[in-house]
Structures are given as structure tokens and as C-alpha cells.
Length: 141
Image (cartoon, rainbow, N blue to C red; front, side, top):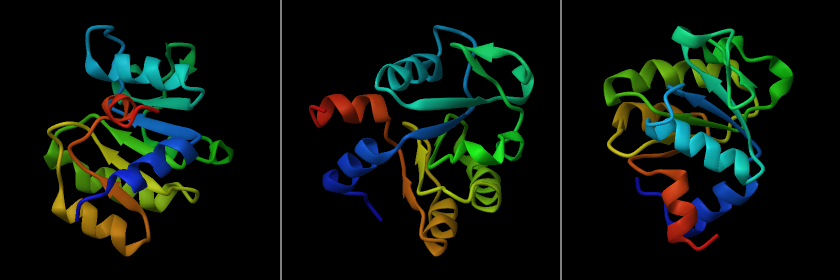
């Protein structure tokens, strides 16, 4: 199921808190630039990376897993910078641990029909193979 431009625009406008799974400390990695961009758009971005848990990235504390994010954070979107074969467990954890979740966003080259079905069954939108930074520019937001 493809998410249309009107829905993409709505997601980008209404999302306030984003958990970024696979956030990288390396400024040359796409996740770093996307996190920096989203912070600049006024979003709260919570980096998730078990290899860097306890450190800070762009001034934000890094958590090992989605489950470790404080419950009061009210995460409404999970942005996934991981391979497609890692998506289903991430979707399962997000659905179980993030009660305010509305969107799961899979970055460019990342797709999962099974993850999309799981999300859809819980009323959560799953965007595949897109980048929010690119979508902001494409939709002239």
C-alpha cells in the first residue's frame, strides 16, 4: 500500500517526536544529516543505537532500544535506518512499547510487506523506501 502525498504532508506536519533507529554518530552517514535536518524543523529526535547508548548525538541522549525510551516521551514516529530484514522486530517492539505511535517510516531502500501488515493491523501508518528530508523538499514544506 502506497502512502499518498497528502498523507505524507500530514505526517510531516503533525509529527512532533521521532525515535530514530540506527542513528549514527558519523556525520557522513545519512541518519546523522536527517536527524540534524529534523531537529532544525523543530522536531524532537530520540536516537536509538545500542552501540552508542548512554552517549549523546546532536545534544540528544542515545538509547539502546525503543523500549528504553522514557514512556513520557510520547514518540509518534519511528524512523528506521536499518536493513529491510531488521524491520519486523523493530515494528513489533515499536507497537508494543510506544503507545502514542502513529507512523513507522522506513528510509530509502528499506521495505517490509510483513512490517507494513503488522503496523496496519494496529492502525499505524508505515511509509516505505522514502526519506523525510527528501519529502520535505519534494513537497516544498
